[in-house]
Image 1: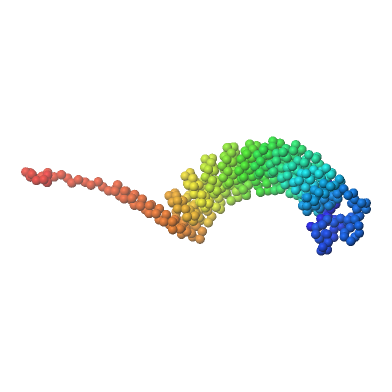
Image 2: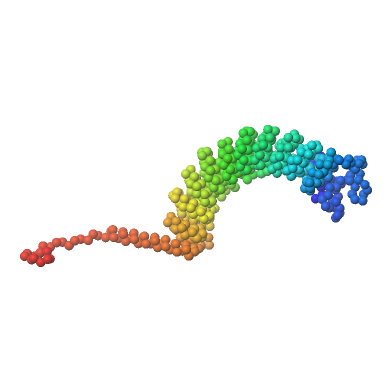
Length: 464
């Protein structure tokens, strides 16, 4: 990459195509290999060096050219860059920028080297110079997770605006919140950073802290009272509570719920936070949400109708199914396309949860099917689970139920399943026959004893 250099102020924009760069560098020239080209420095064969900054005066041997330093930083030659700084007493053009507007101190901050950042600051580097794409050194340090560098920049009082944003709108406070650094978050908030600024995909520092499960940072941001709408949604429709719930971050979820976050905030793509926690089986988070008494919509379904109960059952989270049932959610609530929870649970092979759904007595029609006609019994047969097949047959499942391409539980059954079905049917037939016999016996008339006749007069035979 050909990189042009110039000195800029904190408010000026870098020139991306300096006029002295050739449009098509010749093969083998410095520009063709990504070298820095300075019009004040003659190329090979052009005569002796003209000196520092093109003035024609000899450069002090201990004075470092900031452009050479930038080149070393830009090519990740950090040992070389440190060696340059160690032997220098001054640095000219210390705020020179590359083609992306990045300075030496920006690159050192992003690399996470606090010692080099402090040396550059000592030489007068301007830490407020902002790249249009990447923001300030402080933003770079926070987003890269380099707490020590960020602290050094803040201590210098030359970090520039604490609300500076990179190309996608992300701030230093967002990075510090995502990192979970209470020290950085505290310094930034004390310095006046705005916790309500939304960046990439409309994400706020509060969302970043919730996503990372940093309950102390969540609490600190909420305590400012300047965090904005607690139920603010990202471009995907999720709130901070969605992120905490989906990841099972109980502490962060409790902090958000305590501040009034809505556990049933709807997202067409992801359902509600309650549904997100149920889907992942985070029983403690589900319990905390239900305990608020604010779960007015226990379904919390997404655009396909998959609500909290469906998602918990689909994942085989029996304990969550029990919690939701006790709270009043319907175990028979159907997805528009994928049928009732019973089918989704069987499809996943979670037959313990199937048993729990059936035990509620509220699971609905045991032969209910999803969009392709497949039932819970179909999946038990397909998955070759003899015990599940018997359980579903006992619950009234129908063997002839047709699925995709005319398949039935019987037509796809293995030998073990076929035998189980036959034994179950024989048992049913035997019980029916026994019941019929018992009924016939119960309805038969009682035998009538013959009438007693008196023996003929004077007869002493045994016929009497």
